[in-house]
Amino acid sequence: MIRTRFSPSPTGLIHLGNARAALFSALYAAKNKGTFILRIEDTDQSRSEHQYTELLQDDLRWLGIHWQEGPGVNGPYTPYWQSKRHEIYARYYQKLEEMELAYPCFCTDHELALNRKIQLSRGQAPRYPGTCRKLSKEEIGKRILEGKTPALRFRVPVQTLVEFVDLVKGPQRFNSDDIGDFIIRRADGSSSFMFCNAIDDSCMEVTHVLRGEDHLANTPRQLMILKALQMRTPEYGHLSLITGEDGAPLSKRHGSSSLHDLREAGYLTLAVLNYMSRLSHAYDEKKLMSFEELALNFHLGKLSRSPARFDMNQLMHWQKEAVRMLSVKEMWDWVGDSLREIIPSEKRDLFIKLVQENALFPADAHVWKTILFENKLQWDNEQLGILKGAGKAFFSAAQKSVEKHGTDLKAVLDEMKAALNVSGKGLFMPIRVALTAEKEGPELLHIVTLLGTDEVLTRFKNAESVC
Image (cartoon, rainbow, N blue to C red):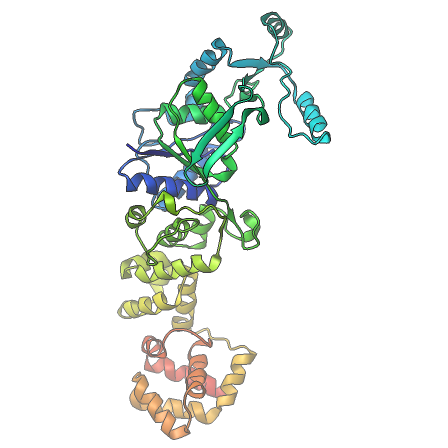
């Protein structure tokens, strides 16, 4: 059975790169009727915060991602919090030490930094020089008696090739001599990401790991750990990074960089889901799809190796499509209580139709609520120029026609065309500006119907008064 996972560290809001890894993992599991696991990697207690654990779960649920094993669900491999799995890690540390595949390291941060500086000055890639690799048991015991607390390093085999086929990037090859012995347990006793992440994936029988390409260099290390312990290994796929329009890694300066930001901005779940599913994954279908449809059409072979560029225009396209898919009830829930209280019940359905064609966010709906139902129009200089260009006779004729035909817009326009010998933009633009103080917007027919005869007359009179 296919088993995928998402293993975030609760140190902040979930950014779009991590959210995409979670989404692709969930889609792949769903496509194959497998299991998607949520595992909280909170071994770094100094940075992990409970509030972020709760927020990331809320964000994932909002995006339509649900886990079959993990917090609130449990499963056969509980606990799904790394901070509660220390006894499991301790067994494997002990096994590695017994096989002499791990050793205590007493090097200080200062000593390690100095070594890195020397290696870089010689044009060498920085890696651990093996200072503590050959310490005898007596030397180790002496340092411990002196009160020194060691970290634990994995003993990397020399002159060994680590090879695997990446699910996205294809064949990969690493030379162990370029890696150097690495820490698997810190001096304070906490487990390193490198170690516990690999152990948990194997213990939980994860079959496929989809994660960002910034983790690619971790993979040979984790494969060596699992091979040394004779544990099963998952298949790895490393997703291309998400960049801003300038090609730099996506960050706050490019706009929204977390799911929480998008939620707060008013984006709809279906819009974000469809947009993110296409960030480095090609879909033949160009229509708005549900999570189930996206999963059905998800293929590892369609994942791109090239960076995925965050395109706000594309996100807005899917937002527009998602708004149009909302039912009347969903639209009312989306726009909020303050709007529902103002709009007359008999005009609600028509207002919703207007909003769905012209609003991308709840704030846009509130703009049209103000324009149509609060009579607070203010014309800027450009708009005043349009009204004055039409002239008093134009709005006088408009009032007479409305008094005669009411909200029958076609009849009103036909009569004005004949009386004033005006058509096209010269007819429609002054009317739109007079009624809405906007140069663009919904169909005039909807606007006139929502305003009603009396309010249309009032607004034409006001326009006439400024000419």
